[in-house]
Image (cartoon, rainbow, N blue to C red; front, side, top):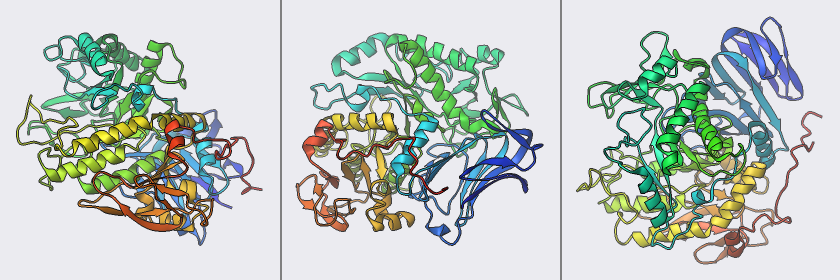
Length: 633
């Protein structure tokens, strides 16, 4: 039997098991209510402990926990702080190889500890203890995912254009164009600078007519004192404050700023009204909620891009004040509340209900438990352009998927240059061209395919470096175009797996243990050890095995083909580019010139291109009310 205990500063507040409700040891500490357990007094260092596991503790695997670029799928042995910043989004949700899922719904500062003999979740300060334990037969991760998403709410289906549905007969199809940051006059105006964007309505209509693309605009939660919204929001109490000073929470480009209070419903309403007037009514109906990590702008360093005048604050101040509490007690809720502001506004504007198919989307750098219920993508942050980063992004996406962040994407090619690599993010370097092409190939097989980055170049045009898809060498353009065209051909497949994710919670990006952990003992062992075959390969939906190339100068690549339920007497795996078939349970080396990403499929290409991949004979439908989990009997 695995026990749970709830403690604060050494005091045992409650005990329980998977099979019984946690019971209070002293009702002066806390009592149950509809939201969880309400602490009768504020407590510090509240923790829930799962364990002991016994002698096989090292064999227990933990998956999920949000996004950390650590090259790991199995988080066992890790301690992860609940601290959001650029490209680091720890989220207290995980699935165990022992057949249970766990949600620690505390937005407070704290940490997750995945030790060999026990697992502990710690909140540094809280008045509410709220967690969920969900069971399923060991190895049935789809059942766990279905129940976890039932508890935290399921994702809607995305609009067709976001999956490349609006195909246009151009050389390179495009579904969305994005207006990035500093397109405003002042931080917090939440409007395009009229000196640079004189007629947004005409512009968005022109883009739609010529390309069929929708438009998205970036907005930050920051409000500087020169913004037209600063004084009205300050007077209304819509800006975050601090206990110990005037309320300054960060700085950007020589100006101090404050973060708007996304936990305040009236502040969210004002934000949306401003966005509706300045963007939505002018045809720009999708929003990039950048820097929404909470408390600060989320840059984990000082004096970067500040020109030596004022320093950015690397982490959120713990005494920052919101309507819902302090940064220390509720700060991790901030990105969720900010996403909610856009969701509420879009749903009101379109007259649709949450959970129904989306007409527009937002894009966020961060999230929290339940973020998947919104029409909101999450991307992996401002990554650097290097082969190591590309490799780390793969496991990052798999952990995000297990955490239920199904609408996941990246900056293709990396957002910024790695200062230790001369060619990094440099569009005139053939060395970078190779990395960019390999990144583009991989992103073809992500939930969303998104090109974005701040490039370097020998000669700037229009104050910046070129970043169009034809900017990476004449010989590379046909390769890039071929993968974009393949992405469009995969739209029926993508729609099918997105629909399945919305209906049942079935993951889109699937670590190999999801589908082959019970049929291939190598997968379980290698996942426990975080071997490359399990951190660098994955399934996209039920049919595609993706093995991105993450090294330069490659002409062939080793791939492990998992043993399937069909058995070794068959050859279920087909190499996409040659149509050669292979048996499972073996390593194979396949040609991988720059034109080809290692890609295998189960079943036929015809079924994949048609989206007919969940036939009754192959689909595993799970009733969320079944009683197969027998651990407690």
